[in-house]
Image (tube, rainbow, N blue to C red):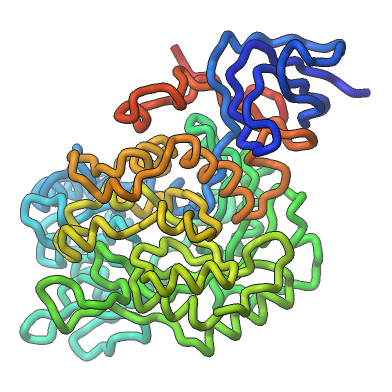
Length: 532
């Protein structure tokens, strides 16, 4: 038996080019059966809901983030302002945390950015040893590409002055060759692989608990951009999270080395109609700009020898691309620096064509694309998935590492769109130096204003309209991430939408980043209500 919900008196931005604005819609069994002007609405019987003239948008699709890491770091020490503004404050907070844990517990923190610390440098093992000498401490930098650990963690991992740098990684050393406790890229795995593994139940529970935070931000579609098979398969973790109450639709992108370990005989693994499915393969072509591990050209300011780290090869990219083609899924490649982006674009120039109606290859972040790379990506149908919050939140590191002019030219969204490249917005949460990293409104505000959190101009010539920004977080994000029947409010689509406290399309641009969601609906059912 069908059941109708009739929503009226709204200001509905549909993100549907065929029917851009509406004020009423009919929901039947969770999907939109009609949407348009109220005076044209057909006569139906059902529950009527007055939207009270409020602005309605499709729910957000976060096309690149790390939900499990986000859920877990939300319970760790946040090494970010306003709580932590110096290494000294970090040490004191770690001492307090140490007292609350058992003697053999690992102490974890996340989110530090040396550009925001009073000392202006990365915390090292000597700093962290002041907080605890006999218990291991692991702090993850905001970019997630760098770890700072204490001497105990180095000892457990067996890292000494004689330990060679692993492929695609770097162990920072002092003038005597001793490890400083700063581990870059794959070198961090030497410690991570020694850390206790949480159970499937613990991980699924953390995701289910965090689901409400996503709903409060209006996010109902998410991507897991670093899915692993070992020690616990992420597919099983997310399925268990759904059973525990997680409401988001989930697209999984497996790390390439982990993807090769999967048993892929069950076609249901790739069924995009399911609440959890495998969407693609993930590779890294370089590291981060803020951590000076992105593969750039020219080199970073102050060190002509440091052009970052190349972390893949053309051969590996092609091999992963063939696997993605075989299974009808995407290849997503992290590439921030000019050389990394060029490597991906040149490898797949006019070869990224195995999916119909969707990008076969995604470049994640695409921070410093050259004019040539943009043109060749457009000619090849390669999509860019970028994060406006990066430059907004990490302006200090960008200025220190790239300089003012080059920083202003990062993430040239307007130019990229004008060339016809498919673009999706996302957060990469928790991998940014912001205390609310997954908030879409911060990203929307950054894209529209092109100003950093401190008011710095971050390239206003690349600013876009709020309507375009919303589309890049909804409709365009769906088209790139391929979660079906979401991202638009259109006939036959899931009735997933948010109701805002004020009209985001009309407010002062400076107020966009501070907006909040009043109500979130999935399938026409209210799943979140802002507390008064």
